[in-house]
Length: 338
Image (cartoon, rainbow, N blue to C red; front, side, top):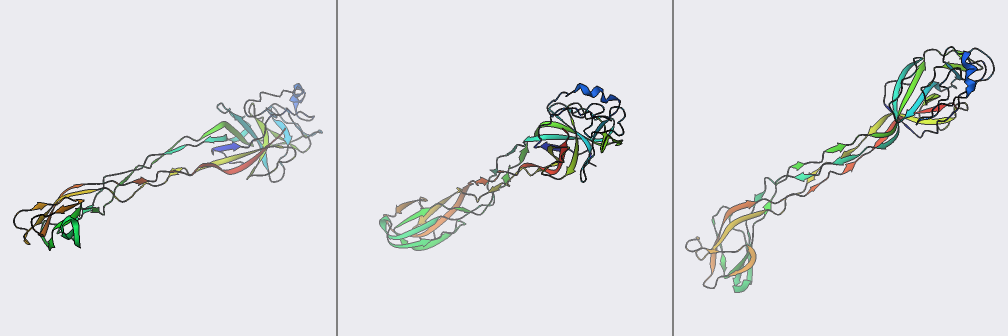
């Protein structure tokens, strides 16, 4: 029999309108069924088989007691009878003649997801280097060229005699930024309609000709048979097809955040040039902006660099992109009587 107590969603349902059926041999209420009560179709379909004594089996045979309805027996491979109701309101209750009931939903509408923006923290563990220094054998940064590397600890660095030089500020290397954000916010999964499935009649007595008694369907519902899986077609006496799903696969999420390498850090220090090779005497400050600095008096023979302020750069974030979707799973085909 159909499983009970699981949330299911119903999609691709054919129109569920229909007529009461009341052939002979269907019980004391069979004569009353001639009133052709088509029922309130509600939002999910007609009330076919919801009254007493309905049947599509024809001929004589045993009758159904009370409000039970005579319907065609479930074909081989199908389970039933069962009853299906659809609507926008809260589902009704199944008749007491049904042993189990399960709620359902129809028409998956939306399953929104948004991602928190990815951000990067302040870089840490960056290491400042030393200025890049180029010295020249003549003024105006001409002549023989040499690249020198001043000591990073403020020590004295002896250089070839030079009349001019250029220097660019020290750069920071290494380091990383802590990743923040990227958490998903999942919206409620919404459906067009609620649904109710009534399963397992307490009594399934034979009736009419090749029929079986079933409790009445809820108002606005249908009497049906069911088969697990997505069946392409329905049995002849239960032609109206619906596919219901016992679950939802929710793979919504966000891609992981990441941070690129730090960029744009500033390492501020003092670079000086000296006439004496031991860095004694006056120190000429050397700009670290790449401009040419001339010595119009004599030649420099030593450099010193004293590290100063470190101003961190920044990391560029990436990620936090929506992934996945909401999709139905575990289908069951439900075919309803006209």
